[in-house]
Image (cartoon, rainbow, N blue to C red; front, side):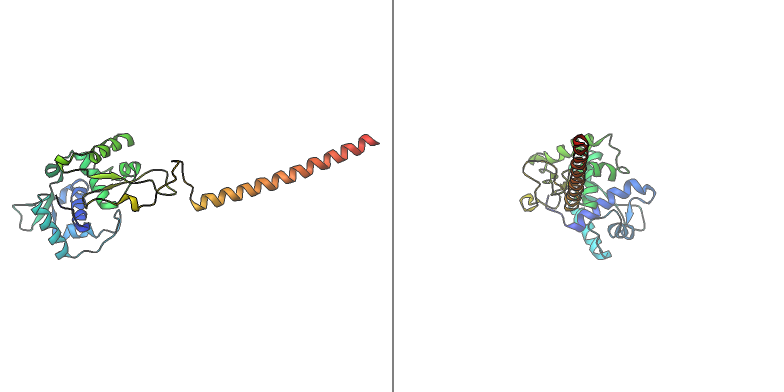
Length: 222
């Protein structure tokens, strides 16, 4: 399958999302689909697509059998066909939808964000499905997600979808080579301030001890 454009992935993500969140309105009309694509919340990046652009994306996805048009309605309505076309379980489709709608996410973020699409028992369950998507064989179309290098200041690595093509992970900032947690600038500044305070307190205690010794020594002389 060819790499998908940002708008094509947004259309797919919206169709998967709305199938679960507004089942009474699903399949979606073009107007509802445009609204979902241009939604300001739970979207990264936020886009502003017109009716014609969304229709072109839908038509392109229909050619790939990722979207189908419902029959028997006066207004054209559309539904996704991701699971059947890519031979994926609903849990994997939910994870891909969140990644298409919200951009790269950690396993914990994915579990929280996909709550309304599929309820995962725990984070390890999410990671299990992600690893299956990442290890997908070339015979089945190749990997559909990739684990990104842990970014500086981040404690967990994020995952990204590959429906728009490979991601050059070598161009992304990597975490420290030792694999330890990397502190953000604000955390470093806070630690330095705490260290300075502790040093001042130690100096005050040292001065107090020296004074006490001096006073006790003076009393012994008398």
